[in-house]
Amino acid sequence: KNEVEQSPQNLTAQEGEFITINCSYSVGISALHWLQQHPGGGIVSLFMLSSGKKKHGRLIATINIQEKHSSLHITASHPRDSAVYICAVYPNRDTDKLIFGTGTRLQVFP
Amino acid sequence: EAQVTQNPRYLITVTGKKLTVTCSQNMNHEYMSWYRQDPGLGLRQIYYSMNVEVTDKGDVPEGYKVSRKEKRNFPLILESPSPNQTSLYFCASSPLMGGGYTFGSGTRLTVV
Image (cartoon, rainbow over all chains, first blue to last red; front, side, top):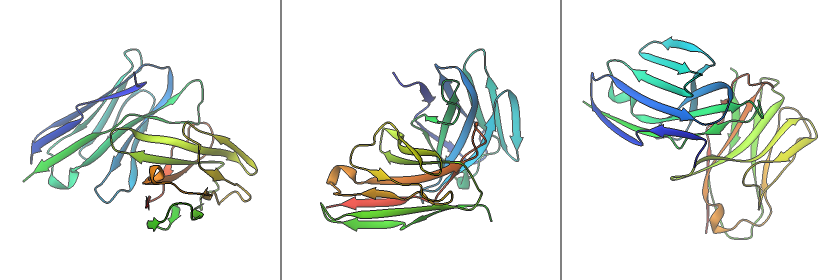
């Protein structure tokens, strides 16, 4: 079983919809990354968080350390949000190494 | 601009022909790492380095070598590439102690 699980694996939405992507992990962590990978391949860090909630524009990330769960929300989704979203955690046993989920592929249609 | 630069972006090569993928960062990060990304498997760590002359194996090191002679550079070497090394490769760097990763743009390697 993967130490980091994401759901759903694939997600389609109409423009304007509210999107939620979930990440659950089974190890103790010091922090969690949400990453975005566009079809061209490059990976960009969206958020790094260790508690609570962070917001950047239409993106909101939350984390519940006790429940070992994080969510990424996209409000008023747009076709340019179409990408693969990857959750990655820093495990307490090795605070420099990231463990990655397999990603959620999001497609937003006009 | 703070960045991780990988080259080349695309590479097609033949089995057994040695190749090097370069990675350079301009943020003075101690930690650098190589990943490969394959469909359904996500990102898997190949090798990492916590500082100059300090390298260690990740989860899938077989068939790869790295070196860290300078802090900014961390090349990935395939001495004798094989078709199962066809993949999308990413270099990344971060300050130590979970300071946040910066990724390169990726290298799509095809070995025929």
